[in-house]
Image (cartoon, rainbow, N blue to C red):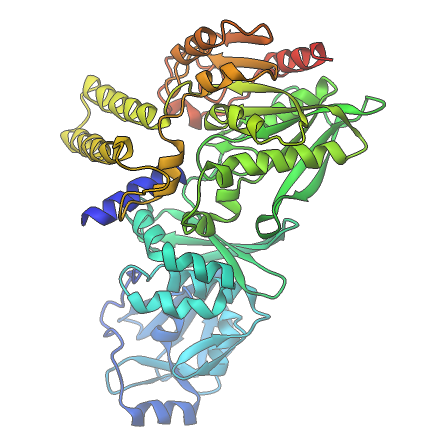
Length: 565
């Protein structure tokens, strides 16, 4: 891999968290370029190349030599077409074709276009030798887009082919961070999207999001979210690398004890969807906590594996008479525009939106505007001092730092990577796994040399370095030290079983803030990085076992908040 490629991949993996091979027909040849005469004849007869048309929308075609038939799988539709037979089969039901299927000179099956549309439930035209999907057919438009998106590594022309469907903002972003960079990270881990499975759509107040589910060539389900504007253009594309499966509601989630409302707030170009959770058994204005995510492209719940730390906290705090605001992180709602912004820093990633959320909450009449708080988890906790510095209207009364790194994030990342390598060696994992981890550590050390190089700064960025401004702005950040100069009350909490940000960070917060008299601390036994109990030493494997934030954490936060009045 080229040096520039690994640097971009490494940066993207840390900050945000090709022609798809298809099961080819056993005997049917792969479609080849055909003569103009053949193409013109096909238009006149209404016949189209089955495989070419099907693959372009995410259908899989398999050839059964014995039956002289092609089986097309598209979503929940299976269409069987036999050569020289005007009767086909759709999910076991007979479908008469307008003409018998044929063969090109290259021995590729052709089918009537009207029958193709009817069988696969597609609203489109066959124009200029390709499928042109009607705007009303949102499922097929989405599946066709994902197929082309998945080709951007192997076929450079695919990137250009997507441009007409994008907003100007996304076009601009892809000039700096093309889709191929995302696909390059995706394919080694999950495989290439080869078969459309299903699609759903939902409006979140900002975008109409179509979620297209595909099966990859590795047999792994892959969901890709396409965010559409009201004008029907795609404003963002987000592949879900890890679904939050297995989450279970906490026992303290009592129906009727809280209510939730959808909200929208933020910078005009980067409006964010969120949720306001209000207690139902409290009269008058209530305190509110703005919940700020850690690093990564998080949803409003900060879903990770089988946990949803921010949702659990929202429900728990509502039981204590405290409202919360949680929201989709900018890097999830606008992943490409964030990655493609040359001036992108933690200000855009986290800080600005936390302040927007606090100010939004303060204007709601149901909220006690004198009691607006911020809860920052992990990197969000590390950024609490910056959030407070940027609270120009002094809206924020106090803040909770939860598992917040006390020192530079780049040093912590190296510690985490070296820790993973050590655990792999201790468990005598296969040499291939160890070698891969050793390569990651070595690669990050090279990356780190540039980050730490004092000849570079936010005004003199390292050349050809991914997320250069982000790193030059955020490197050497000592959050606990920064909080020394501030006066806003803090509650610093930490899990005793956190291997990502271990309890030594809590000790640093205590040491640095010794002279302050409005800071409280608490260490929770057995709680991991997501504040979920684990009887065994945390390794991250337990993240995929259902668990919840104990109600005790929300009770402690609420008690501390009420003590600030």
